[in-house]
Length: 220
Image (cartoon, rainbow, N blue to C red):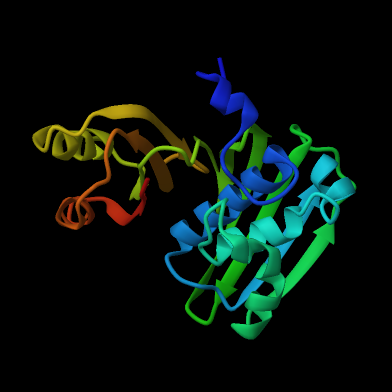
């Protein structure tokens, strides 16, 4: 069941003609910005399916860039996001892909700067709702509508339990959790959606655990 209320179907307060192509696209871009943790210097956006066919008319292009600039779905600046990105010195390129995606509203965002880069795949599933399905090659399922913790860790016995024990100590309820790995015994990714934003001190405690490489959070 994807929708819990009529407002999920109508969509959020937003700029643009389409909750799927505009609000959803903005949220995909904003999750990418949140995970990258800073404004990038360059962005390559690959559009698939319906996104590729109608991205200019439905404002998908300005919406994704607006999200990457950390604008919310109702922010009037989204309309000028491409110009604002240029003013900020961000190099933006759109690539129209002919490959048939699993979901018609699919975007792959590859962004970076001199400090590093990141690649993310997101889909807009309707009513402004999204799912992040891939992050730096890891398969995952992240809604972007709840606070979340992403933990990159070594694929070793006990790593998941250690993270869960820290969250339990602070009475943080887990709404959804899954683990993805590319290869047994190498790096893995924990995706944990929780019921409240996580304090910085708790994130630091998680980072200090054995086998943990990096902890990133998405705030509500």
